[in-house]
Image (cartoon, rainbow, N blue to C red; front, side, top):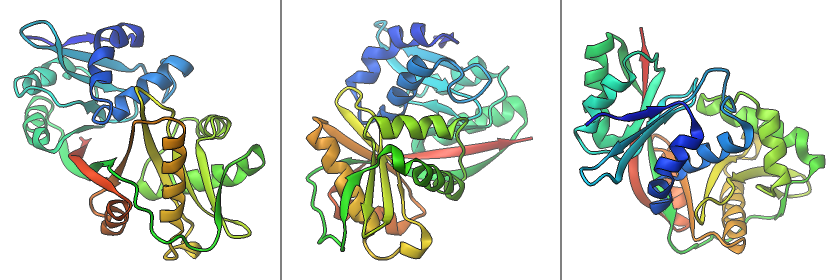
Length: 278
């Protein structure tokens, strides 16, 4: 069975929307990506065209999806085993910088991709998706939380840029993204006379909100500010009606994984982000 491929986000959303909304926790990233493409156009993440794919089960229902918004890796949902070699065929003519898959699916797809294209492959990051169970905040450090305002724009922009640099990622239009986050009330600052930490969150999609970036500048680290900012951002999401609050961590960062588990976040799935090079 071949993948149904398209470069049109509306066609993809019509085909895969119900599937994505059926499991908003696991599909947190594609849901927010599709939302961004709807609002900002097909080149929201870069100048090259995105591509989308749907895999159907024998009964015709959607059983998996893939999408790529260049210059980012191709992103897979959970898919049946037979969909992975078929994805190699479907994407063979597309230069991929990498792939983001469930940990169990990384080796089969990468083996096929390497054989087909001859590229080198290496693990860029191993991540874990967490979903909030019961919020169990620690005793807060000195200070208080507030939503970022337009007057905080320069600070949020600088911290977002520093955060992306630390995790080795970029954004095609960070300024526009920051303006949108602030206008949506999606940036929480923890301050002690001055802002010392930040947590940002996504718009709600199918009752799900994702904590995006948690960042504390180096001079303020180790004082509990990141946990306080995350707790405040989580509460804000719940107060706004979110049914599920989720976040991703780098599995190599034991400190952040332990922090989020203490706050009440529970593991859902592990993913592997691969990087391809010639």
